[in-house]
Image 1 (cartoon, rainbow, N blue to C red):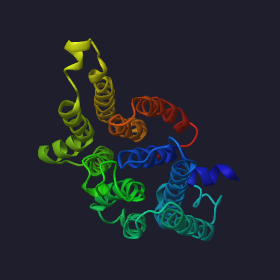
Image 2: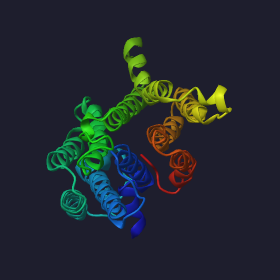
Image 3: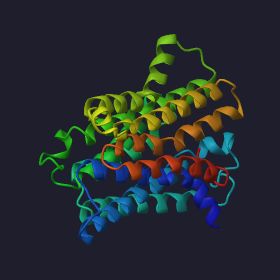
Image 4: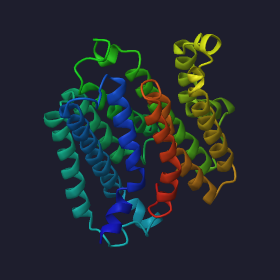
Length: 309
């Protein structure tokens, strides 16, 4: 009985929520060194994000039940494994629980959490009839990132997180990547004829994390360490950038094969969200960035058990 719920929640994508939240929290000035309180706050944020994501995914299928009964009869609801009422009750309950924990336990911004709830519900209800919903999907990740960052009253530099030069740029970059991923997947899946400009724009969004990561790397690295001390630490971001670019390049080429290859490519790009977060978190923690990159292939393995899309 558990597996249908895991499929409904697309649970193989859940770890990307954890990397989003952790990256945002650290970039906004969070730290797990010292007192227990900061680590407890991060734990509450991870739980809140998990409930919001899982509830939103369940409601996604609940809202699509009519479509799935015609086109995806093997999904948990149309196949009869889970009733529509149960999906609505559990999904809404998780959303409410996630919002409560985010605000009252983790201390996240009320307006941001409310906006995240609205964006998730709007996407679930209107992503089929409205092509512009891809931007709402991107906004969901931006707001998730922002929720975690807003739980800290000030960033490490003493200014509000939304004025800091780390958290907000990477939140927007994550959103751009999600929009690009969805646009490219839809273009390839439908086989629609699109203008070269639109196709270029969609793929450019996929590479946005690499561009932003490159800008931060070139502007922040202490290049004098290399000639003065022979210290190669400033070159640390380079392998992460190359891995990310190679991943996107391979996935977009795989999509061109059509058919089942599109699903595999989307799975790769979804697992690549962890690498997007690695490009962000490398600004504050190289070991954690390495862990995020290593998570991507593990997510691909998990997708073999529970589909990511």
